Amino acid sequence: MPVGDRFSRRAHEVAENLFEELDQELRNEALGVLPVEFRRDGSQEHLDRSAAEMWIKESVDEGHPTVRYYIERRGPGHILVNLAAFEDPDSQFHP
Image (tube, rainbow, N blue to C red; front, side, top):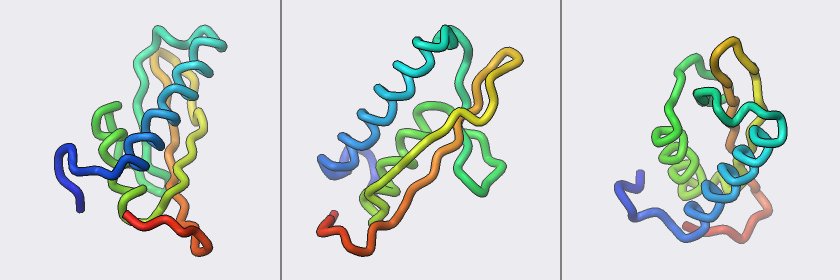
């Protein structure tokens, strides 16, 4: 498992793009002021943004180059975002 800032460029790009898209969606729905928690699909473990970013990067570098999200719960008082990473068996991706 990669440690620290030893993630691939692709891992950084996937995480950055996902958070940009999510932040924009939250702003568009006027939800940008609420705290956001993340949950890995199929898990009950809740992650903060930093841990979610680490998980996204690890997933990409472990061969799951597509990471998606959906807003699972909107309130009260916080947002819960579900994260899922997908393996692409036809991908030319190599960490």
